[in-house]
Length: 246
Image 1 (tube, one colour):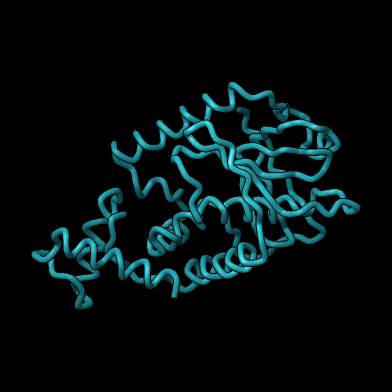
Image 2 (image 1 turned 135 degrees about the horizontal axis):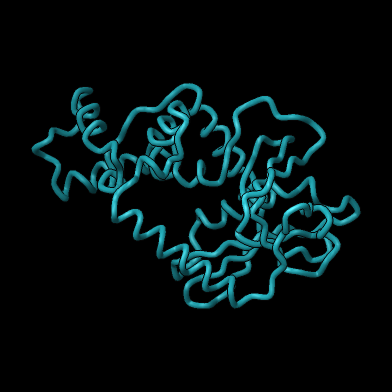
């Protein structure tokens, strides 16, 4: 895929902090990592740079490429705008970053079912069942694409998840999805501006910040280095989940 200029949509020009789908997914895993990536100005992936993570990412890319190669889709070419293809009945793939200036959201959907302007997002996943985070991603991309939809159309919000079983799961998006998304986006912006405390979880083993975070947690009276066993991991992971959703 080519590296093409970003597509800026919406009537206004966003002046605040941008939030991407990756921000949301990583926030549910580790708030501290989202904060550090933001203030250091580096991709979050660089904080998880080890062989295990690279293998997972590469497996996901290979699966995505395999799925897409079997689908009839149109790809945005150099000099072509996404907007010029929105009256088609096609599956669209675009390498262009889409920036919604009305909501401060930015991202690149895996695929878009254009459906003559209805614009249903499609995400490709390596797992076997639809997860809550998948549904939030679809809600994110639904909102991201909203300024591109034809005004006279009022399609029922939904999207699709392509699972590694070959199943295409249709997900209806409700007010609860969008309310949850809105709250999560604001939490991400708050973390980027105000910071977050490190917490120990199962994510630590995939992170280059592991030793730093363990030391910071210990210094503030958390788990001791000697208690970091399976029980400690489970307890810390549970604490992290609680803190993320409270």
